[in-house]
Length: 378
Image 1 (cartoon, helix red, strand yellow):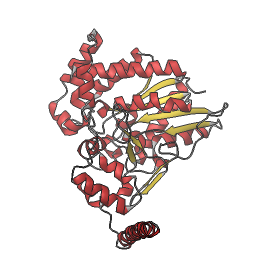
Image 2 (spheres, rainbow, N blue to C red):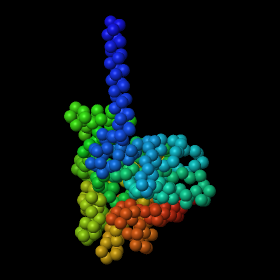
Image 3 (cartoon, helix red, strand yellow):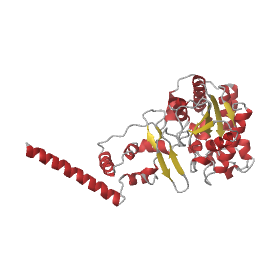
Image 4 (cartoon, helix red, strand yellow):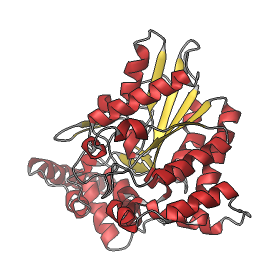
């Protein structure tokens, strides 16, 4: 019996030593079995994954807390509460005005440092007045309107914001998201990326490839599903019908220049107007329940059309109309951006969504002035 126990212990020790040896060799030769899978999705290595899956079907994924990634031109740092910003207390001080800024990658700050996002430049602008103000950047890359409002409801209202600003990008009615597609095609990769041991990653990937591990189902077309399954009677009123007809008259080439993937065609569909209406109504209801001031900032597509005139004004007008119907304050910075060449505010030459540092500065200034002029802030 004693000999059997010794043999078992020796076997366990030998296996552990072998695992440690393999782990050491993986590290020495910088081999990570996860890297090739990530390269297939145009992600260089696992350290550049800063999102993680969640079980909530309306949120799907969120930012990974306590993560810092250094890219060649900018750094992404996610704090312990799970948003891209410095550390904040979960409990707000009584004398402090807390502004929560929600939205997609235009709010998150795609391809720029956090200090240059409009939320942080807004905080700098407002704090110069000497008032105790916090502006929290709660944006998440790739989110659509359902994810933004759902995460506000289930997570961010717990931070007790006094004002919630939704940085609404015109593509927020679409399902276009690399992260959503990643989850759909290979959701288990995110789970494996959480594991520190390269050897365990190697084993799990082998099991995955052999189909002994089954990935969970993820709803990629969540917007389409929600709009199709909504049985609510919804009739466009006269104002909505007029705006919809004007949107339908937007030059097709202008819509194509912006691209199908950015969801601008969605505004021609009745069910997507329904989605916009319902989600803004939910935003308004949450503001009453949790006692914050709801604000929507309509961030335009950075496209001037062939004529040099911004082609999507009627879409902005529709969003503004739907928001005001539910008592949501609207800030439309379009005029400030089109005073100059709107394309000059692009982060990259062909990127019609994301503002560069200068564009974020103009956006922050417009938001600050509007908050004061509307007497939302003193």
